[in-house]
Length: 165
Image (tube, rainbow, N blue to C red; front, side, top):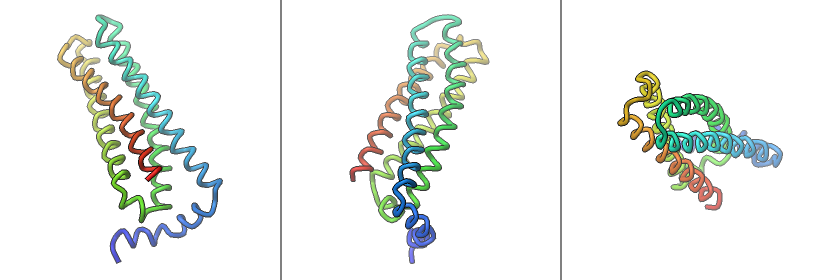
């Protein structure tokens, strides 16, 4: 038996329970979509703030850095809820999802999103340390915020394609 087969067999009791319980499916889906909505909404709002700050000068820019830091904590907490619910949904349909190109596209996009978020955090820390005066760092932050916006909507599209495939 393959590794996937062993994992599917181990998850079979959960899959049976999940697939036989519409209330469980609804609650897990609610956690997944709610977590994505909170994470994505917070991130998109912060990204828009970054893009606005890149057009400003002075202390207004630095206030946006603090906004990013606050949004980052919310995004991480909401992504934790989304990840837990996602693992539960994956375990309920492991055989099909593990073979779906849409699933792997979504996971790849999420990984890129996490990496981009890490870069945004690092750039923000550098900007805070130097008083926000490095134009090169603001350019990098603007690029990362734009990438974040694109990636959030790409994850949403991949998840939508996954759900109808």
